[in-house]
Structure formats: C-alpha cells, structure tokens
Image (spheres, rainbow, N blue to C red):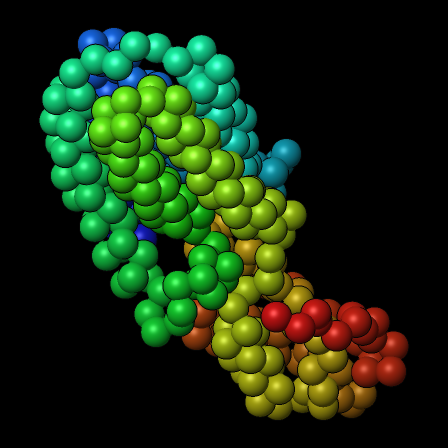
Length: 316
C-alpha cells in the first residue's frame, strides 16, 4: 500500500500532468493560428513540463523496488536521479528552445495576426495551471510545516513536490509574460516584442532549472537526515545503560522516507560480548520505534579517543 506522502505526491504530479497536456495542445494550436513566438515557446514549455511529470512518476515507480543483492539499500534514490534529469530537461529544452525561438523572431519578425485566440488560450491555461499550482502549494505547505519556503525546499528530501511547485510557478510567470508580450506587440505594432517575451520566458526557465538542479544534485550525492532526527538518535543512544559516550551519529537519506544511520558509541569496558549484543538490539528497537524512517541502523562500539571526527558544518 502506498504511503500517505507518496499518494499525495502522486496526486500533485497527476494534476500537473493533466493540466499541462491540455494546455500544451491549446498553445500549439493558438501559436499556429496567430504566429506568436511567445505562445509557441509556452507550448514547448508545457510539453516539456508534461514529459517531466511522466519522468517523475516513472522515478517514483522504479524507486519502490525492494532491496536486492546488487542494491542492498534499495532503489529509492532513483527518484533523485530522475529529478536531476528533469532539471536538465527544463534547462536544455524548455529554456533553450524559448530563447532560440525568441531570438529568431526578433531577428526575423513575423507579421502580426489577431491576438484574440492567444488571449483565450492564455486565460484558460492560467486557470488550469493555477489549479495545479494551488494543489502543489497546499501539499508542500502541509509538508513544510512552520519552516520558511526556501528553507523547506533546501531541506526537503522529496523532490517531486517542490519540482512541480516550481514548474507551475514558472508556468504562471511565463503565461503573464506571454500575455504582456502579445499585448505590447499589437499595441505598439512591433512583432519583435513578442520575441523578447520568449527570451524572458527562457531566462525564467533557466533560473528555475539551475535551482532545481542544485537541489537534486544534493539529494543525489546524499544528504543527512533532519538535525532533530539526529538529536533524537543521539539522545536515545546516550541514555542507554552501558553507553559512556556517543562519538558520532552519521545519517544519509537513501530515499525520501528512508534513512541509513551509522552510530559510533563508547561502551563500558566491563560489558561482555553477549550483553553488548543484547544492548545493541534494544537500542535498535528503541530507534525504530522513535523514528520509523530509520530503515538501516549500524552501531559500532568504539573508544571515544579512537573515533574519527568530521569537520564542522559550513554555516547556512
């Protein structure tokens, strides 16, 4: 059975996919009738977004595979790989095509045609994209709690939610830019303005892609668990009888809801091997009860003076 977080993430992605497929078709038809450069780039943008949502759904599906001999910690991080691919596609295809088409229409402007169909499609697209954006915003808002939005994006271990949110935000911004470009082109009688709007849309997509690639790269390399979870782990281990010191707690997310933890602790010298094994089992049970996301726990008895230390974290 899918976890509540996974089900909500799927709803967000499917809502965005349904909106983008319909919007892309309408934009391409409008671009063909009106010859608008910004409308054409907006069609490409929606088409790329549709493909991105398919990739995210595929990544979620592949990430559910159980562990095997080749991947003993499972395949959950495959979602991070496809999230990085999505960011690259937004940059290479969405941003690249938008800037190219805009520059082409600035260099070789096409005669102006009736903008009515553009305004109709842009209005419908804004309504559909806005509905998808509201769903994504509410889902991410519930997940982030009281944390600030940018901090929540940086700390999030589930890229599906914030990728769709950023895609929808960029799409709404693109629609506004396209509408302004179409209106100014006809108001001033200069079709090059429509091409300039396309370039601006491409720049917006490029900036969003860079931000998403940065966050996806961090997840792909491997990020630690939330500091509150680490402190909970440290507290449980430190409070266990027979533990004289907790040397370090090192964690890594192997998926949005899966955490591997390696603990180095100094055990009392008087403990027998049998007693130490029983104590480790008790600690593991207590950790699992306190934090269900701990899917793999490794506890290493180690003298405090022999434990390796990490450099202090960079300031955030």
